Length: 380
Image (cartoon, rainbow, N blue to C red; front, side):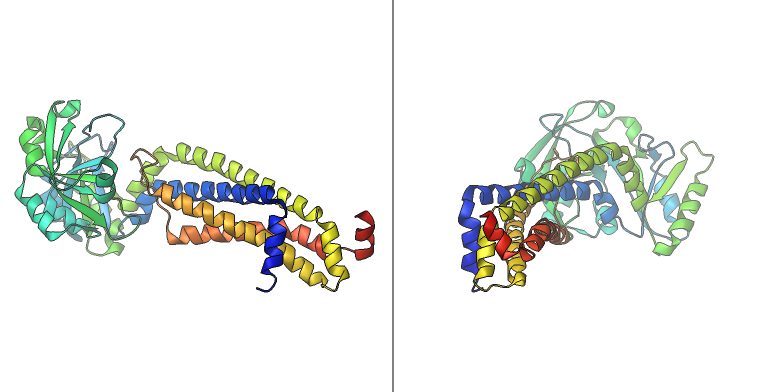
């Protein structure tokens, strides 16, 4: 700590360049944080998938509804602990750009299958007492400024008649893990059956199944699909992780494009930053030679240059990651995917920043350590 004033004096030698170098690091780490947050959003379904949950959809995909009586047939199969169904609503709130997930569910069954979602007991009771009630995720409520008691109009899609439906916000759910999706709206199935066209009375979108033991998932998949083989509505059963991965593949090109472009820009910024720091050290050849001439060791010169590089990296990295963490909490993808930075991601970013600072300062530091006093002073 006694050499801290010397370190700060060196950094203040050219304040504008120091500020720009710190800013470059901050921009690079801000971009790193956003890339990690977006990637986490794309992979969210894989991260939160339950090991004991299966998704049963139509063989041709979610566009093929399944008969409602399938629920009881699935429930009677061996190895099945619980089952519920869900249907995609697809309504529009104010503007088509306001995309968010809207699931038609059976409330009690849904919470049994997804215990990671929590709703206050009083709000849950109000939800169960109101057929037009909905429960919304905390992030979705924050996005639109909704609160309990608000009335939400949604324009139904054409396959549901295209009419205006109105819902009452009766509860706000929260996930127990940082990566849990808090951007959903839960609509009661009873109300949906009352308002939807008649042909929706006996069909649902898909089923969510819980197996008794995760090890029985493969056998349960074969059993379920075998139960409905050669029927008018054949099924395709997948683990929840496989189901989420299928969505990732549909957006895989988008994810690759974002990651590729962002990575190129990120490393370009780091190269520019490293070059700037190397130039700054070379300009101080005379100062370093004077320090050696008055008794400071070669190792001190090495440590001083590395300390300056690490200080700039730490300061810029902290600023960039803090900004990225704040921005990631906002709706930067228009509700398509949730973005977030975990503690592990922040730690990884800090490690990258410090490693980059060490690498960028290593060659200049070695040059300072090997500097010959006599020859250096002749060049001053």
